[in-house]
Amino acid sequence: MQLLETTFWSAGGSRHGMAERLGFSKSKANALIAGLVAQGLLAESGLQRSSGGRRPENLQLNGSLGVVVGIDIGATSLDVAVLSPDLAVLAHRAEAADVKRGPGVVLARVRVLMRELLAQCGRSARDVIGIGIGVPGPVNFEIGQLVNPPLMPAWDGFSIRDYLREDYAAPVFVDNDVNLMALGELWRLQRSLTNFLVIKDGTGIGCGIVCHGVVYRGAAGSAGDVGHICVDQEGPRCHCGNVGCVEVMAAGPAITRMAVEAAEAGDSDALAECLRTHGHIDAQHVGEASRAGDAAANDIIQRAGSLIGQMLASVVNFFNPSHVFIGGGITRIGPLFLAAVRQSVYQRSLALSTRHLEIQYTPLGAQGGVIGAGVLAMHETLKARGVAP
Image (tube, rainbow, N blue to C red; front, side, top):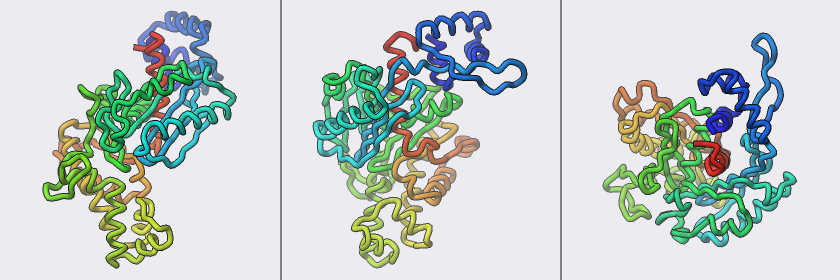
């Protein structure tokens, strides 16, 4: 049903607004809305601001439909949220995790968190109408399974759907984690942008591609695997087997490696002190050292940003997006990294490709993954019920 899909993607609206978006007459829209309200699919949720005359009722998906669960599994983190049909976060938990321990260990923890979060908001497994899961690797979207994931080889061919079906009757949808970030941005923007990229720079580097208003996954689910684009033929060997991949040279672990080397070589008092105090260095520490004026930290950030920009310039020339949103742990570094990325992209890309290009950190921030997982769960559930195209 086009009206339900429009309500979901536009985060609600008035009867008149829905009619205008869909090109329906007011009488046709009112009749359809009345039917959906009677079926319990739509609900009126208070009055909007008046623009003169009677204040219109705001429409949204009915909260009594149930809840969706969004799960964002990162290489080193786990994020789980219970969301209402309009994607308000009802309960949320984030914690450290290690995907290399395998699906049995990680998903057992997911099940525990799901039970606790559902109980926290007074819900049970019966109330769950859809589950969306993001994972850091290529996914065959139709069957919901990872395919030769470099960062998590023990997950290859494992059926996450079957595992969760033991506890939940709701449909389970699995996608690459950065595709879910792209879905989250698409929902936040209410589909106002139709061609943009989302880059996730964390343990690995990936790209979510929104083309003509939908996430593009490619023929086999591996579209956007930009982390293995070569940026230095003489560079170090990547875990994929090739050399000079941007992932092995500019992702979070590469930044940490360069920072530790600078600290141990005596090139940075700030990073050396951080290593002594914390026993480790992460991207946030490098950002803090940079903001304090540390030259070595600045060099590390500018080098990583320049390499990401070098990779992005090729993608921008090829795809010509209107926006590039950058997320992942790298955002904790701060504005210098973003400036280095922008400078590299603008220097290397064609003028026509960058004339109106905007590059910024993703506004959804750390919650982009679970929001995107909620978008996936809700939209695919509506499709499965035959009420969205």
